[in-house]
Image (cartoon, rainbow, N blue to C red):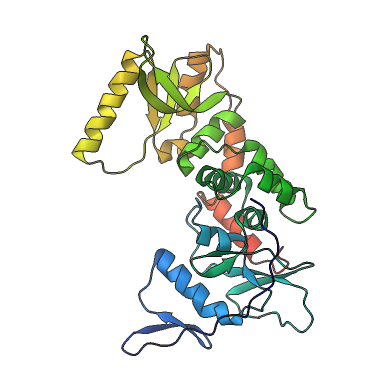
Length: 318
């Protein structure tokens, strides 16, 4: 579904101070209840700054993606909030160190999420592409497609517009896959793809009688090898038992399952590529260099965090 620009509504008044509540000062005239974290803090900050938005303004880019609750890496503390506004006569661009504001030649499209006006997901992805590198943008795009918050045609339409971020979004869309069920599944898939190994996400495994045995994160096409992300999380006894039963069914059906943690994906990609190469009968294990190049721009590694901070300091946002 493609959203169309709507007539701007008046900005909300600043939230009233409630007696008996401890407050944290964010800036002149901007306070939020003290002690908030995570999404509660994000939404409180946006509501507190909301009275500064011009009538044509909407929360955009990374801020909108956070409101839409897409898969994003951990973002640096103190990240500014991003606003898009139209070029409307008489509207004043808010100037605050915590805000990054850009003017658009037309009124920005808007949708409501948790009573806050934000860019639609597809446009927010294009705006966020100014700050994010390719790997993190593909993960966020997979999240948007998997959750149904936007469609491939939506993204193609937005990416075709000649604006900053459009080119990177087109590249991300070519690598995206709506079948991913977690950010680390996307990263594991991209590790194989950029290194030249053909994989099928969410592959259904059946036994010799055609009975369902399980569904694997990735199947290395043409082999029996199933590559999966194993989250480093505590599992309750019942869940652990179900996982073991699933692994036995897959093994009985002839599947060869290998599981990897986030640390292996980041630090030891060769350990993932080697069994795939062996299963394919390759004489040489593919180089991990393409993956390491892609990974270097991600917020999940120090080099990517440094690049990101350089980008968000820019004033010329799209």
